[in-house]
Image (cartoon, rainbow, N blue to C red; front, side):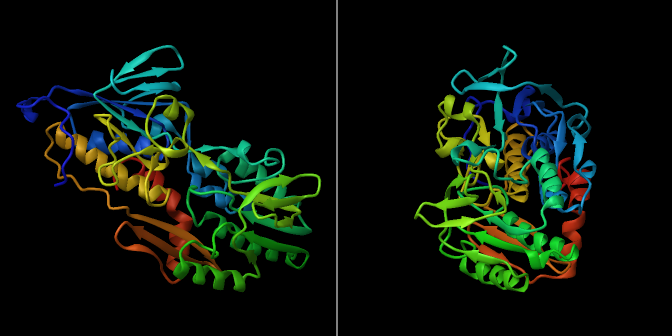
Length: 393
């Protein structure tokens, strides 16, 4: 069992702990899965989730929607439907966290108190940080923009499709690479591939930051006739000339530009004085506890960790924090420290899929593409809604 901060006064018997207020900020995967997991483990917790999205969207489907591989209606569920009945759901916006007072100020003017706080507010898409991005570049990182991209791709029949990653970290590192592969197959089926070139601009020294994985993706790109440049960190978009510019002065012209938006933490995190770079919260890598903020945890994309920002990582982190809190509340669950684990399923082309696995100790590996990986990727939203987000993983 790992060592955790003691949130109770010394000598207090865990078996006699009163019901404690557990406040969860965020109604995405991290917030909902954690709340549901904790509910299944502890009867000593009063759990409240604060969020502002009555509809929950499965973000991984954003890759398939632009290519008409999935109807968006399959990717959206009511938040209240996904939470266990006894969990309170409050539609509101967080303005500030006050760790010393153990309070949270909300946009409605109310103040909520907590014994435990779990920050699961995801990432903010900071498109304004790239001059020329807004109104020109497209992306698939939320439902609205994924659906808009579907309409644009339908009409795109000639020119250079440029896919670029301007900054890290971002959600699901393999996502833009998969987009390039799916684009090749989509335009090939429409007999347009001879008129459309696909160019991938990578900010890394290699195509993918890890050499072993990069070699595999390079091979897949060659099979799909995807051109790529390395060391190209996009810093601005020249809308008039239809070109993206790198920090070294290089440029690439485009007919359609798909750019991963810079990812940042929510503004209220920095405003609350919580430690972290770009608004992501610094946490203990094993327990997800926020330094110098007793009873406060951060999980998912909101946390600054040396691992990928991915749904599977969030689920593992939610498991660890629910173990810690339920154990403190007398449920006697063993605490399983988070070890950096994450597994991403990815489309590898030609109806095959692969698994990208990572952990703190084991590094990152990529499996050989196979048909099983492809079909698991196709149906993962069913598993997501039926069990994973409900805390039953």
